[in-house]
Length: 420
Image 1 (cartoon, rainbow, N blue to C red):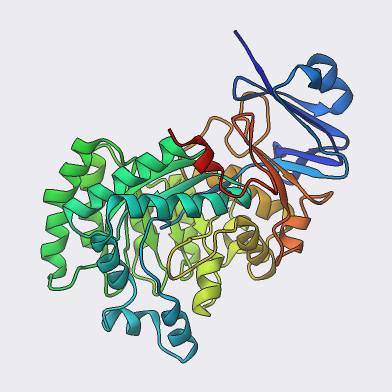
Image 2: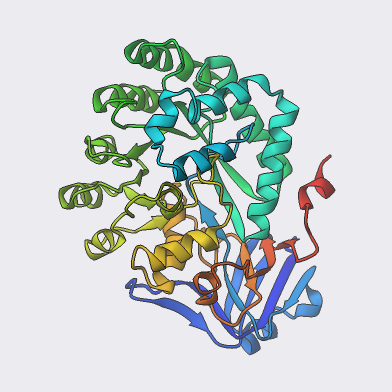
């Protein structure tokens, strides 16, 4: 039996997704969307949609007069599961210390690793749920979350269990990624630790059956291209789709590695070359750009226009983590416009449809077209342009997930209402 979950109607602007040729957005004035059994059943002018799907028959109705409606944001790169606080490192960076300086002194990732190892599962879950609450309130309906603050088999598996539990509890869809090769733990040789990821952690992750992706920090002073390849190929053999942190701090060849192994995405890419971009396009690897990271580090931004001009489906993510403490896709899209040269329309597609591609989601996620998941964001503004325009304000008013209203301005901690 079908159920009319929701009808959102009367929107000044309703964005269904990118146009077929990718040159703009498919939009409707006085637009509406109907969601049946969690899936978009109709989208178009209000008169047409409501004639077939009367709002009075829906479980949820939203009068979006004076507002814009866009697809739910997809955040394809985060490290949102962590413990501890590193605000002092932000101050240290402002005094001139580099990311590598802080890491060499036992800070950075290794500091978070110690805090995560000391935290119990309940604390980690509570931390993650709180972050998901904030992301949801800012319009994110699907988010990728990585492990990688354990750096041993026991803690990595614990992190993945917490990510899986959060996905069960919270309305946001949480996509789990294994990232045991995030850093080299204290007291380890890099080759020896790489062998432990390949020979111990990945088989245990495969047996656990939670992780969907395997990521690696292919970076100067962390994991070389050869070491990263070992990790990713072991992940592929275990059924994990590869992802790569590539060319963030220096150019060492991580982008070409992502193309070689057929990764779902290559992420960061601040130092990617034109040859790198061509390799990603040819291999159908989605480039994920993380402007919040460059903002926090005071670094040069990735060249989004170079990727766009070569036909790459540019995606944008928050990279939310203790070193890039922003939950907001809206802020990431603002930076993508102001600092990376995307238009508001291109930025919106980068944070929705293209971001879904970076997670291998091809079911219409990131659009509001017929057959897509019923994930929609109603803005407290008349146009999608207000997302990057109001860069200091959360312009999200109401969020629907699978056709249910899951966040409103008064819905501050939705997940606590739905815990079993």
